[in-house]
Amino acid sequence: MRGLACVLMFQTHCYDAWLAPELRKSKFFMYSQLGGTLPAPLFLFLAGISFALVTGKLREKGLAPGAIARTTVRRGAEIFALGLLLRLQEYLIAWGWASWSDLFRVDILNTIGASMMLMGIVCWIVSRTARGNVSGWALAGTACLVALGISLATPPLWTTWRPDWLPWPLETYVNGVHNLGEPQAWLFPIFPWSAFAFAGLAVGFVLQSEYIRQHESPAFLLPAVAGGVLMEGARWLDSRPLTLYAKYDFWHTSPNFLLIRVGLLLMILSACYAWCRWGLAQWGFSPMIQLGQTSLLVYWVHIELVYGRFSILAKHAQSIRGASVGLFTIFLMMLGLSVARTTLKRRGGEMLGWVRPTAST
Image 1 (tube, one colour):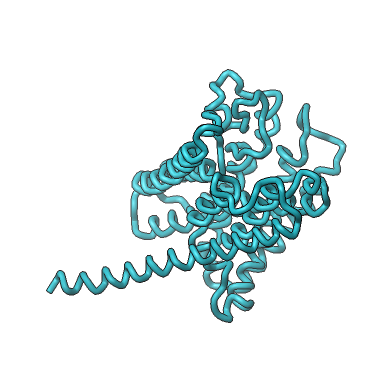
Image 2 (spheres, rainbow, N blue to C red):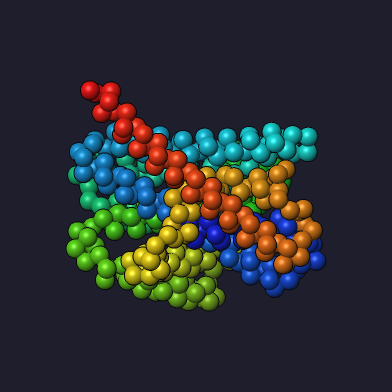
């Protein structure tokens, strides 16, 4: 799934950065950007699943809730710090024409890190309340409630209940206001984006249940069914004349649109399981799986090669064909970088394995 998110991210960023202004009004660009609504939810959703799996392993080792919280919150803080470091790197590379306010822009890494810290705190509170004897289902249920709460609170926090009494570098983490006076749809504030991480957290705990472990293959069809039901239910709710909010924006803050995307993520989860279990991923080398193993690295590097000073093509000056060639080039470059990274990591591990016996001898 991370590999799919990487490919969708590449095409979104490449066409957005390189297409000429007149082509940005075309249907081709519209569908390209529509596909761009998936990478961020995918990354956050998978961060939640991974968080649940790590938390489950730590619980099996008998670690206390406090120790688990320290480990997971620390990891979230590291990701958050990487997000700040990326902002600083881009600012320094673009020295002279980048605005200082870009240092405080809320990007996807910042939100993943913040979401992981929030998930660690929520899991710790639930475990402490149950005196450490808490089931995965209880944690999953709590994660669902938090995700629902975030989605329901998003519309007013973007409009009528905006915390504009906060300094904008803090308010922007709530609603993406940045320094522009109103929330920006191209940023990734906690509301609503962290809801995808908590949805993934709930799914991750469910996947670790005894039933799923005993019936793995048929059980992985259930997310597709649940996703379809969730999507249709959200569409039905959106068609009702009753609304809870003074201002309603379906594409940016609507809980119904968030539910539709969560449903789609569940369907993608089932499809990816089938692909990896029975599909072409079993035939040998899989570019998607490879990219997914180094998603943070290829995200970091491709940003500079697409949007930054080192862009491989002139920005906002390309035809669809030219931008597509650039996209394919970026894909090959990032795939090569990913292979190089995993190869060096594997060889480093092998060399360490050779050194250790010698050292002990």
